[in-house]
Length: 79
Image 1 (cartoon, one colour):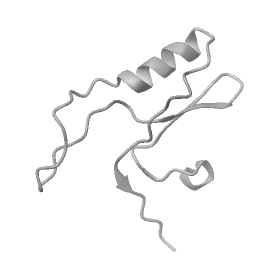
Image 2 (cartoon, helix red, strand yellow):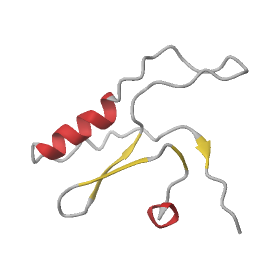
Image 3 (cartoon, one colour):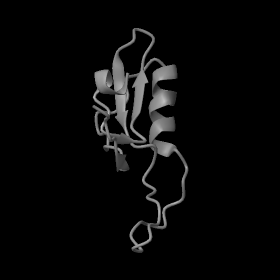
Image 4 (cartoon, helix red, strand yellow):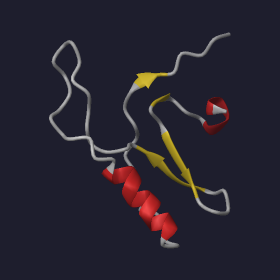
């Protein structure tokens, strides 16, 4: 299923409307995990980007096209 949607990393969020049209593909929010090398950020996990898109769909609106891609571990496909 992930391949058919074109998923590239985990997590990679896909939101569809009631007509099964892809209306959002992007990050959950701006937070980034702290890694062993110290990279990451101090942004709290809120889910605000995905939540905003869900609220817009539930209100019958189209989510903004300003969607930031998810960042995470790349998906390793088995042969």
